[in-house]
Length: 62
Image (cartoon, rainbow, N blue to C red):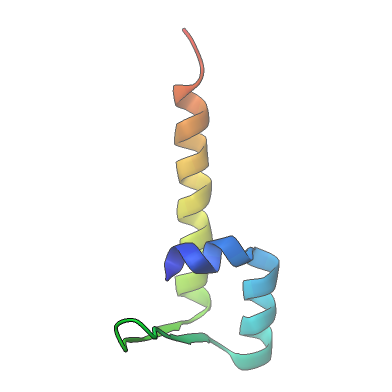
């Protein structure tokens, strides 16, 4: 679910947070309910930034 939110992009997720205060998703496959607040969403996008930094560093040659 976190990957799906990252694929929406941070502006879209921020818009949902502004409108509703949290992002709620019900998985139709497993029936699980997911709720993400502003802190949860910020962590999702922070993880993406860190992962991109690690990937970019591994592409560098020394």
